[in-house]
Structures are given as C-alpha cells and as structure tokens.
Image (cartoon, rainbow, N blue to C red; front, side, top):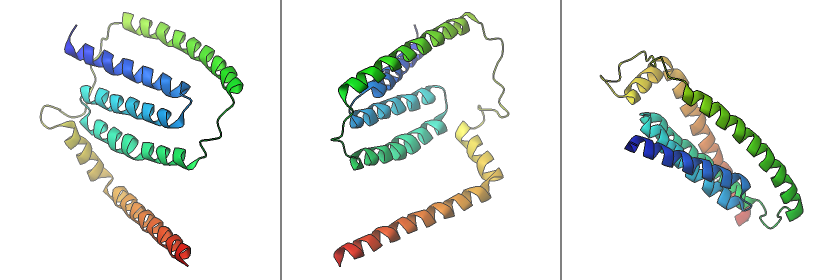
Amino acid sequence: MTWDLIIFYYLAVVMIFSSVFAIFSRHPIYTVLLVLVMIIHQAFLLLTLGAEFLTVVQLIVYAGAILVLFLFVVYLINLRRETKRNIFIRKASIIALIFLLISAILIKNLLALLSLSPSFKAYLPFNLEQKPNVWWIANYLFRNYLLQFEIIGVILLIAILGACFLIRKVKIVEEK
C-alpha cells in the first residue's frame, strides 16, 4: 500500500464519518464544526489530486465564508427550543433506514466500478508540464471573462458599502 492510498483512505474515512455525524448531531454548533472538518478534508483531497486552485477556493469560500455565515445563523436562532426527543427518534430511524439503503446501492456500484479497468486517459487542452494549472485557469478566466469579473467586483463593493451604511444607520438610531 502506497502513501497516496493511505492518505486517500484517511481523507475519505474522515469525510464520511464527519458527514454522518453532522447529519445525526443534535447540537447545531457541533454540526457546523463537523461540516468544517469535512470541508477541510475535502480540500486536502483536492490537493492530492493536483487541483491547487480548487483547494484554495474550497478553503476560502466554503470554510472561510459560508461556514462562518452558518455559525452566525446558529448563534442568532434560539438554541433553547430543541426538537422533542420522540419526534427526533422517529425521524432518525426513518433517515437511518434510507441511509442504509442508499449506502447499499452505493457500495454495490462502487464494487462494480472497481471491477472495471480504465481504458482511457483524461484529455486536457493544455500541457501541465509547462505551467501549473492555476496559471492556465487564471489565463482562461481573465482573458475570456474579464468584464464579468470587474462587474462582480463592483457589485460586491456596492454590497459592502451598503451593509456598512445600514450598520452605521442602526448605530445612530440606537444612540438617540
């Protein structure tokens, strides 16, 4: 067994277990933290596949922005109102049965895929030996979609300025 396989199996097992524990977790903060563990391991899995750009995007966008938003939403909701235990047990047992059925189907398909031998090689329209894939992605995006990136930048700037204005207006009203 090579180190690549050991790392892949470690990342895959941690991703699966953290996802399952996040689904069945009763505490919302633990759920967000378990999803964070899954996203970080998924980013490192992308790194082992040679997708450095997607790794950075995964960490910045999902772990950095979206999960922080989820955490703020969890803190804003009233955590004292919990789901009653008997309703949770009934729903959890149905979800567990559905999960086992889907798992059995996925394992059957995985075993069928493992029995196949790949007879093709991925075609890339560029040579990764010359320059890294981040250069190719950036070159393609900024050459073909520069105007769209500029428009998105201006829209995000306007949104940030609007949020700052609304917060400032709320603070002024609170001081009066």
